[in-house]
Every structure is written in structure tokens, then in C-alpha cells.
Length: 316
Image 1: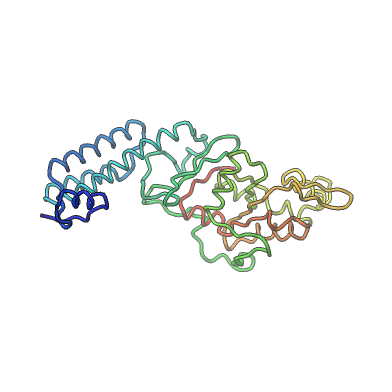
Image 2: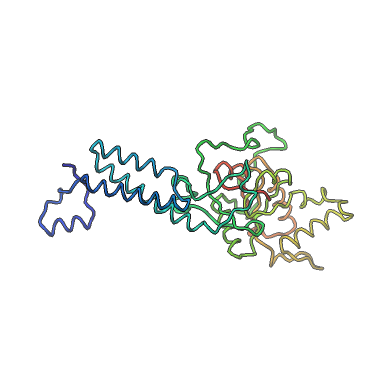
């Protein structure tokens, strides 16, 4: 007879009835069959709402095989895991049924996101997905669930030439926080929840942004914050165009005595990756103009890290 470890409650019960603490019961065949049946019921329930996870059926089959080999304890554990996946898949599908994906996310080349996802590819141990707003529509950000997926072609190159594509430092400017994917998602979540003081900015040129961007981000090309590159455009000086972006998009105010950044937004800027200097250049420009460093965040990894993690992308 196999020996199992006691939980605290089971140990106390054993002592109360006078049983030796080393005695435990192995799973019996009926118990395992019941667990497998419960797992199958949970799988079918999840499938009925489009929420069956990729590996649930495989787990159930594995549990059946282990039971047939007489490995009842192992079969019981696998069946319990399968049942848990079925229940979570059902709950996840119901929770996301109202999060309608915009049409552009359903085109080829973009990640397809359904509740029928693997439970083994969460964003974080306690985070399956994040709901954000993009162009007035709800978008569910999650990781991909295709084992054969690879990086988009534009992010496969390793030799781009420096300059201009030089590796950026870990800190863009003194006082500016460098953030990662989880922090970006938290900012997006706050923004979607109605916090108008946050703006996630894709600093890349439109041709790059159109290949896919972070849901909830707005594309403000880096050269719109460069006085020299904007000079003469639209009949205005470069300075006036930069001022317009800072006032109308970032919420700062310019008076006779200079800039007032009291109501300026917290900006989270990114571009293509650690080899892209566009967002870092914008941060340097904003700091020089007096933008508070604590209102600037830099997602250094940018789109290359975002797609490497299999996270949702959309068209701007």
C-alpha cells in the first residue's frame, strides 16, 4: 500500500481516532474513475462556451492511461488538474464573452485571441489577461497559445548596424523609470479604467506602427517632438509644432513664464527595442524642455520584447 503525506487536518483526525500517523490511504479505482469523469464533465462544459484549454483533453487521456497502469495516485492528481483547467476555462470564456475583438485583430498576421487558451501560458502566475481600450473598443491582452509561433520577420534581424541602431542604456535619463511588460500592462489597465492622466506612446514612425502596436497605445512619431525635423512643416516652425503636441496630447500648458507641467500626463514611451533610440531621444527632448522626470516612463524593450512574450498586438 502506498503512503501519502498527511495534511495537518488529516494528521489531527488520525491522532483522534488512534491511528498511526504514518498510515494513509491510496486512491482506489472508483475514486479515480469519479475524478476522471468530473474532469471530462468540466472539459465539456468549457467547450460548450468556447473555453476549452488546449491541454485539458490530453490531461484526461493521461489520467486514464495512468489508471489503466495501476498508477492511481498519479492518475488522481492529473485528473484533478484537468478538472481545474475545465472550470477555469469555462469561467474565463464567460468573463471574456463581452470583450468583443475589433475586426482588425482577426486578420491574418495578427494574434488571434480566444478563451480556448492554454493554462500554461499566462502573463504571470496570477494574471491570465488584461482588458484595455484601443480606439474606443475593448481589447483583451494575453499571451499567444500557438507552440509553432515565431517572431515577426521584422524582429528576426540581429545585425542592423550601429549607428544608428545602437544598444540603448538601461536608464534613459536621471529620474526616469525604466519599465517592463507588467508595468506597461498596469498603466494600460489604469488608463482603461478611466485614468486620463496616463498616456502610452508608440514613438515609432507610422510605417512601423502599422505593422502592429501595443493595444491602448497612441502613435506619436518621434520626429513630431524634434524641432529640427518639424521646422517648416504646415507653414509653422518646428518649435510651434512640438509645443502643439505637448499641449494638446500631453496636457501641459505654456504661458508667458514658460511651461506648466502640473497637469501634464504621465507618459510611457516605447519604440522598437533596445536597439531603437527614438523613444529615448524623445525623453531627452522632454526633459530638456522641463517635463518632470517622474512623469516619464521608458519601456526599453519595446515592441521586440512585447512580441517575444507573445503578447497581443493591434493596428493603431
